[in-house]
Image 1 (cartoon, helix red, strand yellow):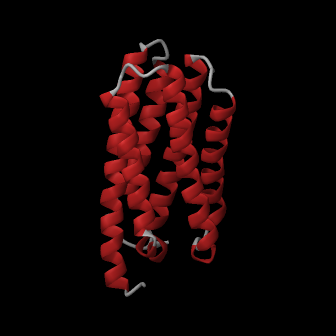
Image 2 (tube, helix red, strand yellow):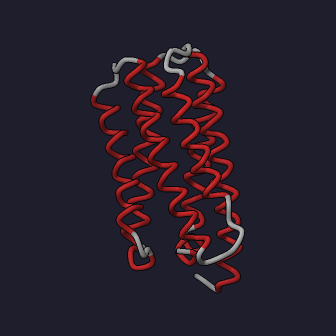
Image 3 (spheres, one colour):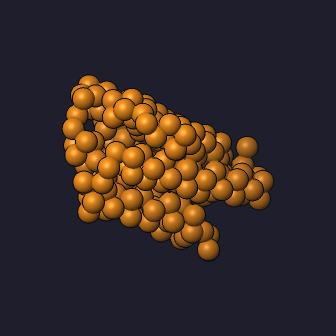
Length: 183
């Protein structure tokens, strides 16, 4: 898994930059309507899942448990498609979709971080992004009646922090590439 992260560090960086861009857009324009936010979220989740699926398919032989990563990517793509098909979902339904996605991505990230720790010591960024995702999902479920502005700020803040963690992990993985001599 370490060699996959080292070779495909740029995918992590791209995912992180997309998350940061999505988060900044949500923070800059909090007056966005639920429909526009829904479409932006759908596009982001679909592309994030697609990159995960592509990475797993291209480097499947390097993933000892490639099925989990593939499932995570497919779930992200499915959430994106469902959100595109029904853009006028209620705020509560949108909250549940976002919370479920964040919770599942968090679980998969923590499991991947545990696997990564078997190959190297002290790697916490992927695990921290997983914990952040789970906490974000739980907050959305606990307080579903928060206003739309609060929801947009939570989503934007989460996406920026999640993206920064992925970009930091990508640059560490790029360093591993040089250490491992991976092309």
